[in-house]
Length: 442
Image 1 (cartoon, rainbow, N blue to C red):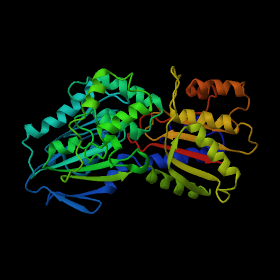
Image 2 (cartoon, rainbow, N blue to C red):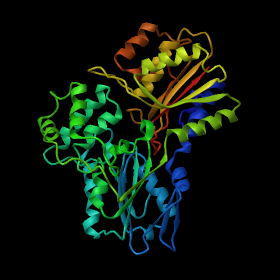
Image 3 (cartoon, rainbow, N blue to C red):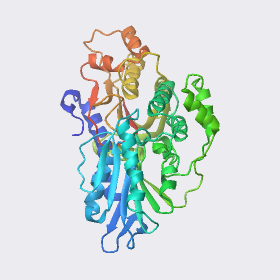
Image 4 (cartoon, one colour):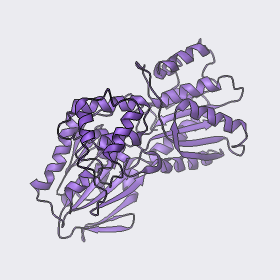
């Protein structure tokens, strides 16, 4: 069971079902399961097939690069399909250890704020081109997953890593959507926004991508290192203006964005990008598991976004209107974006979502359950994946409505759910990342 505290949380039959369904979703999108279904390798022909498309390098060599929370386990899975002897060299950056590889080096770096180890990892990847004299006869395989924006840092000249950390932190706290955050990141980077793919041109670059982005926009996932970029420096400035960050941003950041050059590439004929996993895949596995358990599931959306409180209010209205009268479990995926107070407490968006649902539903007389979990296993906190609450969460607890509101105002959902004793979902780092998944049972 991928949920480490399953026995503690599974206090009712309804909870048992919910936890089994969540586990089924996460397990479906683990790299070792996805990679094996996405690619096939012919060692005699030195030919790689991705979703039916063939890429040969019989006259050349194979190199592996990439980054993201799942990149380490993706690399490990790749070496179980392609013999390490057939890989000339490689390096990927990831957030957690645990993966074992023979040829592809795994560089552990920081997330969600970038660090020097991530920069070193990127330098190592870029150095492969000159070290091995990579040409158009070779093939570069790029493993990309959610978290790659932070785990593949290489700031533009004139902007320090610390200054990029400052603006990234401010954007993450502002309520900006991930695509807006990444517009700025791309224009402060030497590798994002298609520049990594451009660097290896004319060599063919094939990217295997696990998406954590709503709508799976290729240019947004990990800030699109091998994807043409439709955004501009002017767009990046508009994002900072929208969230009142232009005046407080580091001077070097503003100066670089206003200089407006060089623009990121709008065409990359040498790059081929494949989304091999996303939250839709996880939700379909959850739906199958729910049906197996005798429930009546419906996938409501793969694009859950916006302020959690507004999402929850909308969902309750939909249920009360009878919109889902033929179902008894709702499945959602996406990435809510709460706006944080100046001095937030502990807990990420999934824990906040669960706590906000507890407040909204605490007077509901039906049996109900709401769970929200980060598929990477880290809801802005190591180990804690999210939260689960139900109609019994407050039974026997000396917690008032005012208490819940106080925790929510301070964005301190972790300490509220910890106080409830059986509401924090613990998985540890899962090695994958396709965004968040939510369950409503009633």
